Image (cartoon, rainbow, N blue to C red):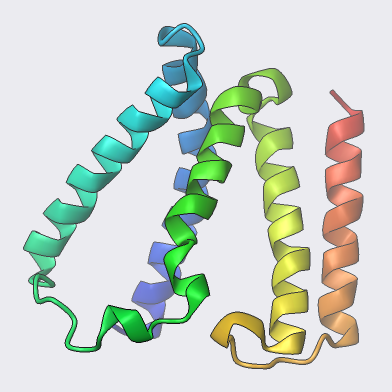
Length: 150
């Protein structure tokens, strides 16, 4: 995939992340705040979307590598996503989309800078330069300003 296409898809994912917050908050309210039922609906529709995309893109072959050789962190993505979805369902309606997304994105950036710096979980090592640390600090300042304004 060419670089511009990659960046457009990543940008769309960022926009959809914020839209998903509102959508999920409404689902949670409609389901009378039954968080686990709402999460089941989300993961069910996500499964349908994943299978549909796999069929549309032709990515339907089973991997040739043994799944038993995958490191432990390769198995926990769904669990981690479940925690994120639970938090979004349970709290985004109370916090608002801006605060919820800002807090989760800021902490994702701080964590990512640390993961890159130490090269953990198979990530390529990228030093935490002054620019990266400065950007993380600006994000923390931004989330503080957004949170205090509510």
